[in-house]
Length: 269
Image 1 (cartoon, rainbow, N blue to C red):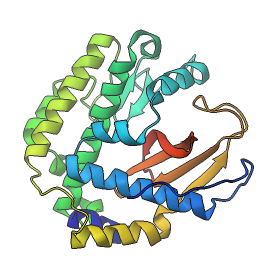
Image 2 (cartoon, rainbow, N blue to C red):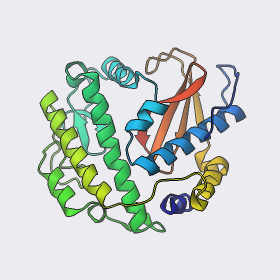
Image 3 (cartoon, rainbow, N blue to C red):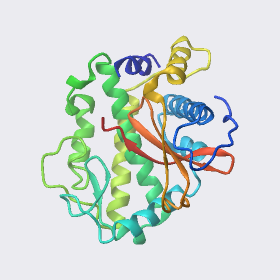
């Protein structure tokens, strides 16, 4: 967790009860507190497990994959394509829009977890190498040679570490499953190179991290009120967007009484 605390310098409990107007355009204090507690739990669980699987089960909307597929199918068909001829999924990873219909929800779920595990474990590796000046580190310094070779051998993954050739979008369910298998293997290699104790509530470093998340403006959420259906949520839904110290932005909406994650993106700024 000292690595995560250092990254804060460079740049839980249950949810707070809240009753707010849907058209309120500012983040309420209750929303601010609830969202930050989700960031704390998300960060702690990944630091403990280095795996999004339990986090998805605990903090995400149950049908987030189906919401993603439906939203992309309705709003990006015919798609706005990348240089690979496909749709963007993660940095260096695109897919053919046909897979929104052809690939099962479980295939998409595995792809989401595998791709984001790879990105997050890479972020942790980068912070461990140079937590005070991570901007100078090269992608090839983060990933072991075995991982670079593994991804380079898969045309769909060859640009995830360094862009060096024309990208090839995932074009079939079989290719999607091979991408997942290779990303899971890459993550396993990297996890073995990142030994560390699990996060514990009483740890001094973790206590400092929690204090920063609760107080720093970097982690203050932004809110948008939808003027049309979005990701299956109706018009007027309050969408909260918040940064984490792991390099991901969480997008949240209320699911019953609780805010839950329905998608994530890499922090670009």
